[in-house]
Every structure is written in structure tokens, then in C-alpha cells.
Image 1: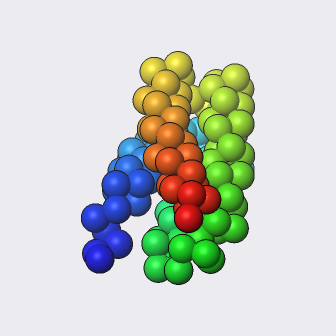
Image 2: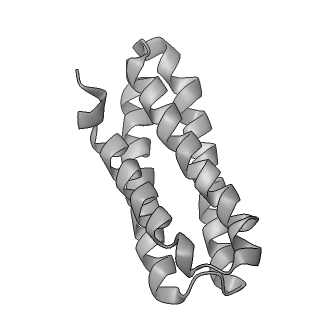
Length: 116
């Protein structure tokens, strides 16, 4: 199986590219604080999805639950970015839609992992 063909990996990969493309429009003071934290979270989620894809079914659940927690952190930080005006509403909505879709995909993966 080619790990790059996993839909949740592709979606997260695209989320990172979209997020990265916004970097230069972000104020310098924010770029190295909350923005960097969000970027690191997305990369961590991407890394853990790839890791989980390589594990045996019984080993996947703890990694997927870690991804779920990181995704929830990302949701909170994105909302915070919107509220402190680092992101405008349009950019926030686009990113949040991607995060919600990744969350649905992750929920399905966790459910199928639990349904041995």
C-alpha cells in the first residue's frame, strides 16, 4: 500500500500546503508564535497519520487517538487565530472546513480500528 494514497493523509497534506501559502500574509509578531504552533501541529498530525498507516491494526488506536487530540488543539488554535484577527473569517472558514473533514475521516478510521 502506498501511504501517499491514503485519503486522510492527502487531505492533511493539502491542509498544510494551504496553511503554508498564507504564511506571508501573517504579521511577523504572529508568525513566530501561534502561527508556528499551528504549523507544528499540522506537521505532527501528518507524521502520526503516516506512522499509524504503517502499524498493525492493534497498534493503531493509541496513535490515532493522539492525532485526534492534536486535531482538537488545532481547532482551538485556529479559532483563537480568528478571534485575535490573525486570520480573517474567510481563511478561517476554509481551514476549519478542512480540519472538520480530516476529523470525520479520522473518526471513521478510529471506529474501524475499534471494530476488530
